[in-house]
Amino acid sequence: MIDYEKITPELLERIEMLETLEEDLRWRMNQICNKLSMEEAKPELRYKIGDTVYGVYPNNEITEFRVLDIDLRTSKMYACADDNNNHYYWAENDLYPTREALIRAHVEYWKSMLEPEEPEEPEECVHEKGMVSRHTCIEWQCKKCGEFYR
Image (cartoon, rainbow, N blue to C red; front, side):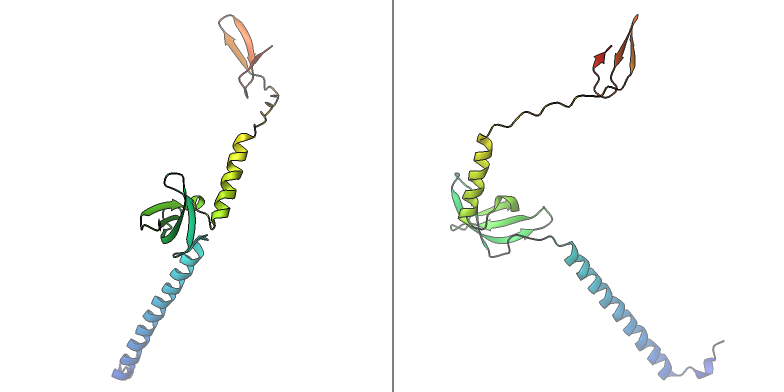
């Protein structure tokens, strides 16, 4: 039971101060938790704002760009500007840290396009029996591949 006679204005002021401190502490803890969860969810980026990067654009020429902004919501899109201050948007996979890295990647790509791919041998199906009735004749059809057999 509460003895209301012992409640003084000083005690009420102290309780109010403790409640304010508790609210402040909860707010600060939420801020820290939010910051940590955002840092945990932040993806690793290859480039930072201000970095010099290279891409093939426009007119199929190797062009030097500087990173102006990064949009993480659209899967790592980089806003870049060339020497003439023309702005372009690039996906991270289309940018390279050096001119040499870009050339090397394109040479590898074109080499892979020239090499013929070996056709894969189709796997032999181990037929699962299934019976299909076609008018008067009964045939066996594989449940996996659909091939008819006897």
